[in-house]
Length: 438
Ligand code: ATP
Image 1 (cartoon, protein in one colour):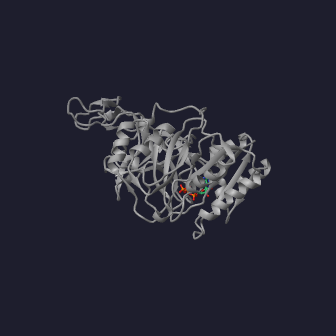
Image 2 (cartoon, rainbow, N blue to C red):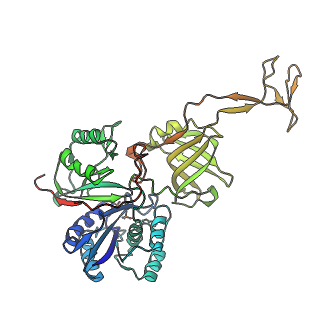
Image 3 (tube, rainbow, N blue to C red):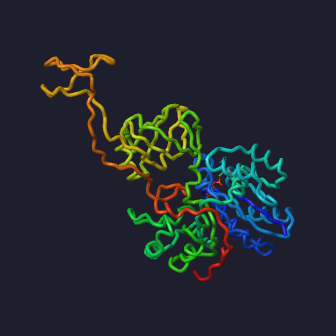
């Protein structure tokens, strides 16, 4: 038997389909002739790519099989052709099949796909050089995501997601998933499941909103936990389910540290520096501040959907040391700003130096010029020393995130800190099934 890695991406649009659904159907076909060596992988890539349709997800299936490369690619192509969005010109499916172990150059490509903007030419050149087979539909930009998914072996931290799909005739209908049953599941299985409910707004986070095949998706730390959702959650119209192993909730995209002068549009970055301009609220309720790191200065934006995170941001002061995780956005005027996804307050300014106060007149003394000290304009008293005063801060050092409803799929929620895994070396359990009478 031969080891294969089959990557698929860009089969859907905002109006129709879902790459994971194509994968779900493909799994049922491939499993007849193959032995999977891993759960199907759902790989989220750089969330700042402007041409993504939703969460920039791609799928990779890893299995042993006696089938030839041509047979596998033909089967995959048939499913993609049948279930892709034919109406949307922008839909650019790509299928990639890699035989044998995943070489380092493909792993590097996959790694960069998490935070950089990769080109179609680069993907093609790499595959031609390595003899990797692929198929493209339309322009086939999907091969970038498909190859990057193959390259992400999830050999560091990872999580699981159970996705329940709904019957074809319901794709345009309103979903029925019972909120209370999800609350029940969430409360009883915390912290091993995450981002199911927005308790602030009493809203489900597991159901998408478009007319696509996904009924709901539940995230968690193990296949066992996410499968339990099938027993807890009450829903209607389910057709089939798949458990994916994924990089969701792992911060996999926030791995590359940049200096400000290295930033490029659409990259997912981590930068460290000092707050250089006081945060201000602009119209729309967004909060903007600047940071500098010695190589440059950049505006950082905490947009309105980041909710209470803005209450922390507004309390930052020039001089505070912070580590920012976010996406580089290109503005219409050609400038770049940083979209805040994760704020780590490393060091808060606890004291500031000000012009001294005259001990006799109780008035602020005026500077006599650079290095010339200070003088009280009333009594003429002089001093060389500035005055240091302690300031009371209303925030503390630590990590701050937006609410789950506006988190990226890749963002690691606070409850996952301490639950990180380091590689996977287990038996593959049951990872798909058909639902009857739901
Ligand atoms: P969904 O989450 O519903 O599957 P999506 O958000 O994944 O949709 P796609 O339709 O798959 O959106 O479009 C993403 C496109 O971006 C694909 O063509 C993919 O190959 C490409 N892409 C993914 N990551 C990168 C990257 N780092 N650089 C350049 N292109 C990328």
